[in-house]
Image (cartoon, rainbow, N blue to C red; front, side, top):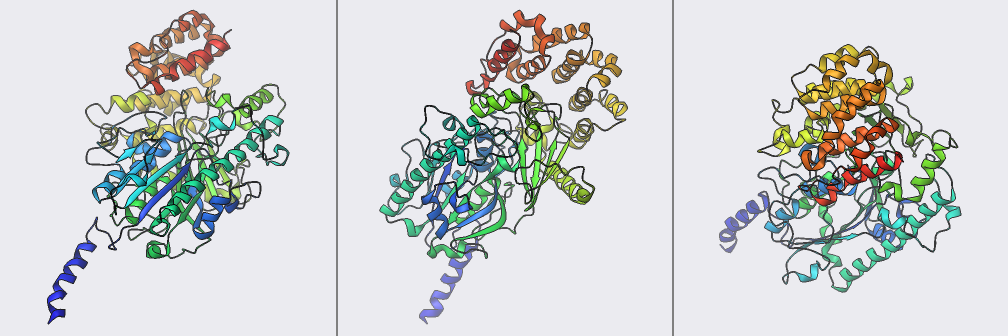
Length: 621
């Protein structure tokens, strides 16, 4: 009789546990994330014999490493945006460094879902998202945030961000080297010089310091008697802070270490391939972290999240591809997209006329960047060490098993044609699936989104005809012969982004194409869309007649005023002026008088305007 009276209660409890948002077990796991900045998988646990990382190696010995983890974006703010939203920033209009856009209505950042489920969620301490926070996200986000501040018995989710390995620290001098610079491995794409070796050796020194800090956090967990109740993640936030790693969507810029430890009591949350001290070839990315942590907490990830859980009851099947993105990096514009599987990486360059190594002021503070650029200018380098400073190919394909430094481009290899075409289709499908906003000039992302979020705008085909725009962008970037008539046709389109890419296609093709289409480019100097005027002016300013260059400056200088036009247009116009080189000299006095910031923009972002002005004036001395 007692059994029959309890049976309905047991059924009801089981039904409740099966509902979305309910935990699978009575006791929810604590979850700890330890993150470090600007470092790839250069740990002993990943087979790097030069590294000294005993604490993380010990964590890996009882946990599991992910061999193929990607950060999606090779720089901090958009990479962290991928994590906090569980979505690709390009779909949110939040891909450009230090941009700031609102989240779409009804969507939350993942800690908000954890807090609703009873978790104490803390962040110590860096946030650096490109998204405005939709209400209170953390219980505490500060240098004092700690699981120790929670209510008794409350499950916690805690992040500790370690900044020791950041780009700024690997070039900080004076420094006493612990790792011998003579024994460092220099990537094939960089020159083998004393400066480069010292930067890489200092990077490894900082990894050792970071490892000790991670060990201290793990020691605190042990001290508090929580190690058996806490799932631990360690990961880096993107590749090393060295040129052609950080900021670039190669494997060298996106590949990060990821170690996960699941205590025995929560082993049912582990995937089938779980093995303590083991490694998995499962492909995972930052966009997957939010749904994964929700799954571990027993919360069904919301449908809008584009990532997929790889642990817990809501784990999805393994994926076949990872995706990488590059947009504006501080003061410089670019548009690169990449895809990898277990063996190959494919990269498409939509701005192939821009060298990889555009002058980003922050990147040029690193000794490696300076000596690398100087040696290239002096003609003292040979391929592949020259590639970083040269215009890009439209497509790149690398075999990461045979060519881990990504220096032998197989895009033109007949033997790899089928692989190339497969990756092309995969990338095209993903761009359309997520409604990638990167095909709009940055100012138009915001102009077209007035009254709603960029995400909502991008899902309105009338406001953002992505397929039509992307088709012209592909034509423009491909340098396809015989494309000029179609590019001219695009310049008469009703959509300004189509016209923008039509003009960009002529700029990409250089002097001969500009001479052939001069009259149409002159007409484009009067286009109603500022971005179209800017591209046409750069084309004429660089490759037209002396009279054309003067007309180009007449168009660009007013648009370069950040106080009148905002930072987006000012940066675009100033970049165009910078690429005019000596032809911009007649405007030197006017450039000196330009405002150096947009008073209505976030200062960390707005300062980019002054950086480009400094570069232009330095070159015109």
